[in-house]
Image 1 (cartoon, rainbow, N blue to C red):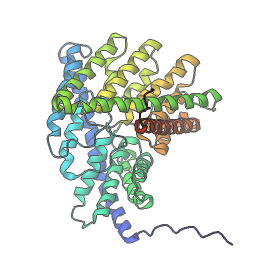
Image 2 (image 1 turned 30 degrees about the vertical axis):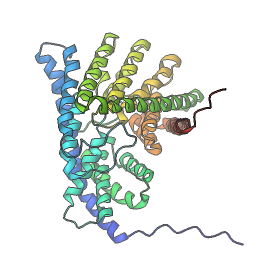
Image 3 (image 1 turned 180 degrees about the horizontal axis):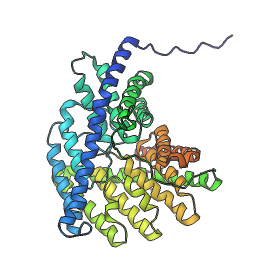
Length: 434
């Protein structure tokens, strides 16, 4: 008896898919321009607050009252932005990257993210860009007479276009959207086509076209890293260890952030936000007392990865601890932003122990930490590996197998911890002894 034939894949409405793909390609450029403008605005406001303002006050670096006061002021702005329609968008305390975004929510999302990111909250720009990209794409195609599924596809294309300008091309942004879509049960192929088309068109803003060299968006590479030319057995062991450690940290940080978020029902949103802003500033100030740069504690952390690799043991511990605690407060305190970049910073800090203690290559440490941190906090596996490869660039092509091991270890350990915690939470209490 012959084996049964494999089931045919579900039929795809090719005509509708072609139409949505063309719409996705058309919105790619305006969404990319929006993403560029948003990132530029965040960086410009950040520079004025944390560099120009201290200089105007006669200080070489932000004094303690700015370290505490600016995050508190940002918290107040976030509170006001969240009173608008949309509540500032996706809460970073929840797992995942937060798909979707409605045009009517765009103002609240943009203002809340700007107040969070520029004023020092330890979050990244990817979540608000996802929402803003989807909102702009849906608004631009509002007269195209799309059904609900078509609007969702156009929204996904807009999100991918926005991420493409941030993550250095269509591959990471496309895979991130695809993995997130698969996690919520969406069909893969119908998403893939418009998402990749829109991402590729948006990325033309970076690569340029013909004689035009493109927009000056800062890339994600770490600069001049030493070449990593051969995979070593100790590096593979380190990848597993860092993956498991980041899984435990990821679960622990999420749970702590959930505890912080739960305080809102008891003390109110505004007191929680203001207290969280003060805590972020005090953590940065305390890290400065330990020899670290307080500004390395604040913000998403991408720009601080290279300086962190030069830190000594005590300074590294103080910086990583302050960053992790500020990350918890930012996740649960009501701010708005993404969870990926601070997780990368913490992952690289864990991997940097191998650099300090065992002379491990900093290039492979960055790849391991990036893959493990991203996988632990987002549960996106392939995207984590590709992002790690993008971050280390040509010098780290040989790190891909090691980064893959780190991501797999982080994902499996996270899933195992989740299962163990779920069983522990639902297990009946033991009978008291007679």
